[in-house]
Each structure stands twice: as C-alpha cells, then as structure tokens.
Length: 343
Ligand code: NAD
Image (cartoon, rainbow, N blue to C red):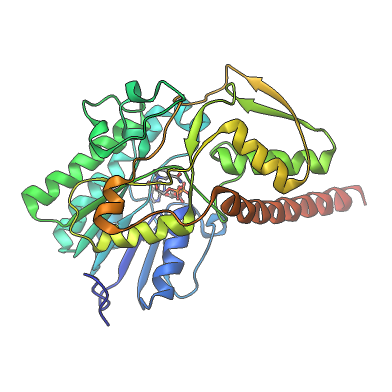
C-alpha cells in the first residue's frame, strides 16, 4: 500500500507516543493501515494517555543516544513529539529542563540520519515567535517569517527554535528529509488536565468541573483574562501533521487555529458547557505568557489546503466531557480509599 511518501513496509516511530499528541498519532497511524508502529516514551506505560495494543510499545529515555539508536532501527518515518513540556506555569518555571529536550532532538536526528530513515517530523511551537510581536492583545497573526530576528519564549522557545534549525541543517548537510510544524496550543481528550503541566483549555475545564462538584464557585484566572490565544483541536492537528509530513515543504510551517479568543472568552465557553457561572478572581502575578497570539494560516492554506475544521466550542465540549469523566473516576478512587481507610 502506498499513501503520499509513506513506506508502509518499515516501522513508523512515534517518539513521545505516551503523550497527548503522540498517543492520538499512534492511534491514527494504526487506523490508516500501518502494521508496524513503534511508540517510545520515557513514562511508565500506566501513565501513557493511550496505549495501543497493536503498537510496539517501549519505555525508554530518548535523551540517551543509545536509546535513540534502538528506537530508529529499521524505521521508515520518524515523528519526534517527545519533549519535557507543559503549559505556561510549567515552562516559565522550568527553563533549563525545557532546554534539555535539545538532547532528544539532537540524538534522534543523528540516529535517524545513521539509520537512513525516510522522513523525520519535528513538533515545534508557536513559542518560537519573536516576543516583541506579541505584546498587544489586539494581535496581528504570526506568519512564519516572524520567528526572525529571534527573540522566542525564554527556555522552551529557544530550544524549539534551535531544534528547528538543526532539522534544517541535517536536511541541507546530510540529506535527511525533515519536516517541521509549529503547533499552536493543541487541545482535546487524552491529554494533561491536572498536576501543573496542563494548558489553559484543560485547566479551565478542570476548574469548572471542580467548582460544580464542590459548590465553591470561585475561579482563579491567570492574568487579566484579556490575553488572546487560538486553540487547535487535536483532530485538525493530526490532519495537518499528515499533510506536512507528506508535503515537499522544507521550512517550518504554522499548524494552528486562527479562531482568536480571550481567556475570558474561553471561560465563558466552559461555563456554558458546564452550565454554571463562576466568580472570577484575576491573579495578575501568575504566569500568563504573551499578551496576544494568533496563527497566520496563509501559507498552510495556500500550500496544503489545510484549514481548521473544528470550532472551539465543539472541541471544548468533547474535551470537557473527557475531563469530567476522568475527574469523576479519580473522585471515586479517592472515596474508595477513604472508605477503606476508615473501616
Ligand atoms: P506531552 O507532554 O503530552 O507529550 C510529550 C511526551 O514526551 C510525554 O509523554 C513525555 O513523557 C515524553 N518525553 C519527555 N521526555 C522524554 C524522553 N527523554 N524520552 C522519551 N519521551 C520523553 O505533550 P504534547 O502536547 O503531546 O506535545 C507533543 C509535542 O508537541 C512536543 O514536542 C511539544 O513541545 C509540541 N507542542 C505541543 C503543543 C500543545 O499545545 N500541546 C504546542 C506546541 C508544541
């Protein structure tokens, strides 16, 4: 079978497949007919968001070059989604840790090159964009050339920008076919929703669900709530990854929704889904990121015909339902533990 450039004979590797986007990608590759999908993640399998029984599932630390070598063995395509990351609260407080992900992409590129892989996909981020272009909430959408002159998000963004360039130079100097997407705030079910690494959409869902469950209708919002963002639903992201991987586009390209919303607007949506109204307290000292950010999709629309299909309201509904279910499961486990402890 042949689709686009894909070599269906050799395994396809998803690095970071125990994570949010990687877990969905593994499921999609299997559904598309890949017989051999290798999924590698540093987390123990119990902590993977999705475990596909038909994939070859491996727990390994991909900062180590010997593990990258084993992961790349015989592989056709590589999708590198492995990264130590989280929402603003995490990346603002863990800059060194975020930069250490450079070891993953560096060693993965070296071993992918040596293994003679077919194509190599790297997940970059809107955090590579120059901060000076994101000071106003009334944003001009970011186009690909706005990454330079470089002034990305400290820590996480610098690592992403460096790794993007490394992909470029491995292509130029060694002929490794690299493809790079700049994701803009991807959200959906089977992702982080608690624990400090979650991003705004999941955090809002959890806060609204918790408020409904506890009856305490106060909610803390990071910043003044007027900062603007766009959020990309996972299905749209997966579709874009496939188009970018199959394309001849050599330079990094935006993969993000252009439906701009303020954080207050996002809370309105989640309140409506949850059927409650909350009293909002604004924490102006909390990490809030840039004032405004949106994706300019001119290039991806022109070159690949990609446009996001999922409205924020619809994607948030699905995300909310999944998190509500996870929340309830967790409460049940907590209650059972309390009951058995008190018997
Ligand atoms: P995620 O944290 O859910 O997934 C990343 C996975 O990488 C995790 O499961 C983690 O355990 C794994 N990992 C970390 N260090 C590793 C190591 N040393 N060896 C092996 N595995 C390791 O995050 P995600 O949202 O699925 O993001 C996937 C990729 O997309 C990342 O590169 C991220 O930077 C990028 N990205 C995501 C977003 C977003 O909004 N989700 C936005 C921009 C860019």
